[in-house]
Image 1 (cartoon, each protein chain N blue to C red):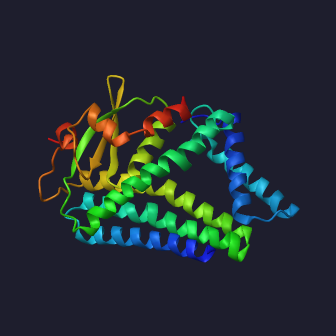
Image 2: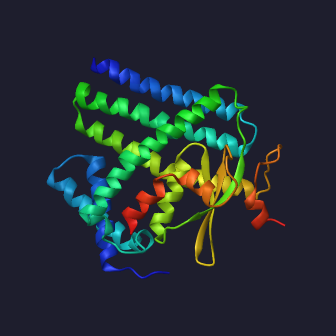
Image 3: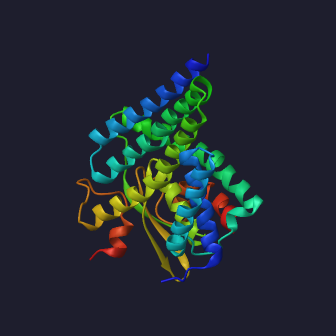
Length: 173
Length: 113
């Protein structure tokens, strides 16, 4: 079990407080004070589960800009492409599928980066990440793929990840 | 004009939700059905939320509602893949296999038998 560190508490507090303000959207002094107290308590108890690595990475403007470009730009384009593809398969009778589970190598070291990439892969229709393993220093994902075009390994990885991995490495490294 | 754009966005969301629903009913096995259901939770939700967001900003002119719609979209998009990943892995480890043999199955090769 990890110890509660001060930077982690600060970051968790900021995130919780931002959520409080977004959900209440009222700026009277009473609401703000109550939110600060509740966020502080939540941060003290949950910071050690929430933050495992550097606590302030999102507060670097460049990383934040990369994160915004990734989630609102690059990722949305991939999402729309995959959705149109999946919708075509569904409307043409679900016969045109070729499912299988492939194993792909991934070159992201950070835990958060790996989690974000796995979530991004799962969120695009047509691929679901099932398991993350590490063998001899190299991280592998097991991905269920609705239309297996290439056998396991680097080529399948390039086809599934596309530009996602490159951008996530910029955000987290 | 604005109402037309809002209606088109909500219509796009509805079309992708319909596609996902057809997929959930007609796909042959658990994993393929889960793949189809992702259509509903991504572009289905995003289309409807985007339409509702424009409606809240320009027609209702109510910032509180607009912010809550953004929070809804963000929460659906961040929590959905966690559940999908857990269900797929759980189904596989509980012994559910598709009737038709899969094209490649590295997971069985490395973890089973």
